[in-house]
Length: 311
Ligand code: CP
Image 1 (cartoon, protein in one colour):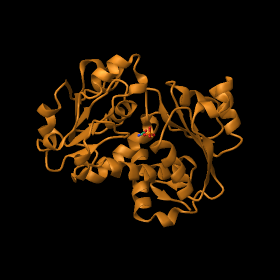
Image 2 (spheres, helix red, strand yellow):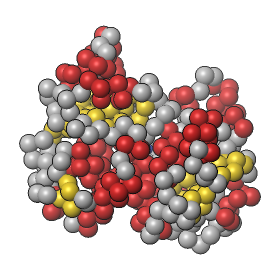
Image 3 (cartoon, rainbow, N blue to C red):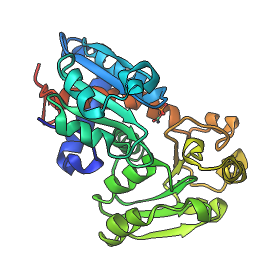
Image 4 (cartoon, rainbow, N blue to C red):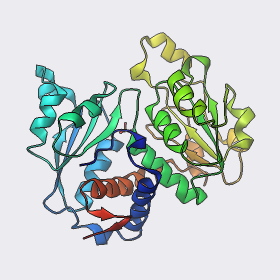
């Protein structure tokens, strides 16, 4: 039985297979509408979500399966003190696969140790968010036609942004990737990511504070929200939240084919007129998130083979 807890749980080839399958699904979704008939997905969300929970649910429904679950810890027996280990033992009796979002780093990993069904990490604290990364990879591959040889600027809250940590980890396996890490001093990429991922793999990167200065170099700009919910005090959040705001004027500094990604939700960091720029790819990401999660569910349930479905 396989789980998806960390972006490196799948090999580069396995990731490619999931992306290929997602492309096949996007080309003809109707071919896949019975693949998960009689299968059930449980979504256990101990933290708020719009995209991840609903795209997992849409993915399973698109595959002909069913969904059950909860959308906050308050509406589950976690509020009575039930452990994640006991919860997953119980959920294993109700569903065939589950997606867990939890504020505690490592909670989905712990769940996977007690689970009889595949567990997908749908975001754990400020740590990892591997299915957002699959979404990002699919969007990059569709936009650039490749997953190697490009410069990516990651901008905003690089300290608490779990999507950033997972994307860096995942892209570290492709050749010719150069990272430009754009953040205020207080929100830099955690040391462990720099040490264990970038330095350990001799991947070129630079840490800067000015978005405008590096904009002309970028093939991908990955904007992120300052993660209010992870701050210890409101004052720091208010001081840092609007450090980077992508505007039409700043877009004039960028390459003609640069793609702007954002995992969403957006607060202020991309102004609305940028949405009309053909380089804005963040709503495409949302659509790709459904296809890639359909592909992942099929893969973890053993219903896909080498990027091609085995109906
Ligand atoms: N990108 C993402 O994780 O969005 P949600 O928090 O809405 O799931």
